[in-house]
Length: 298
Image (tube, rainbow, N blue to C red; front, side):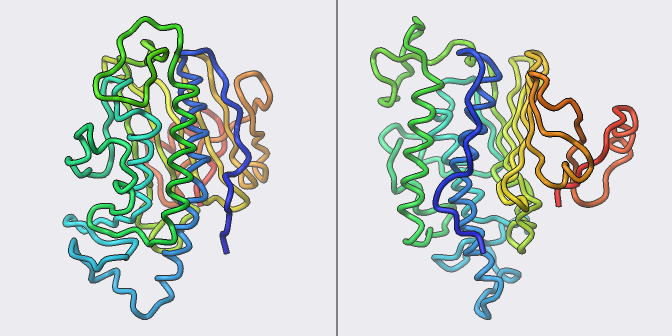
């Protein structure tokens, strides 16, 4: 049974202000702050799987209130974890994109949240795509929201920039400004990559994926974080153009002789993290070309 009330050990935030390394390590810290909430929702899902009243396979967009999951119109799975993780990252960590060029999320959002008068309203987090979040999760949501908000305000704002304060964002104080280095970046978020697995008791196979692309659309940095890995969360992060890379792949990597480490040289043996299932000929060729072992996600 998973019952974590506090985030796992926090990875240090490193890198200069405005660097991709700092953006990656801040994003990684946010994922760590999200972990207790994700685990609590997963416990709800595990309970529902053993409940005779669970009707997941017959649910539609009109799923009953207080459920934590449903099927969308395209028959794909959706849970409140998908909606909450994306909303917390977009609204609290990335300032609704006001510090960046754009944000692209996997899940559809309620466009009424776009108005500035709704920005930061805690009620935005208690209903997700028609699903009412169970009341006992509200305090954990509020705690997570405030922690991620504080993280962003401390590390993604600068007091020495001369750029103008984004319109309609009262979170940014008069002596704080967005870091101009990030204004051309587009953020891509898949809040729960592997929702079907997450909602059917295979949570160790799901990930939070956050990617950053430059103005030309080229992927230049990112974080993949697995909150429910056996033995504790595992993750990889990197920005090739800055020579930044680090990972913590857990027991499955240790068993293959892969050392966890970072770009400072602490750990110089790496593997390629893949899906737990079949892989494409391209990935097979990449494994051979890189001459690294495969690390399955499950």
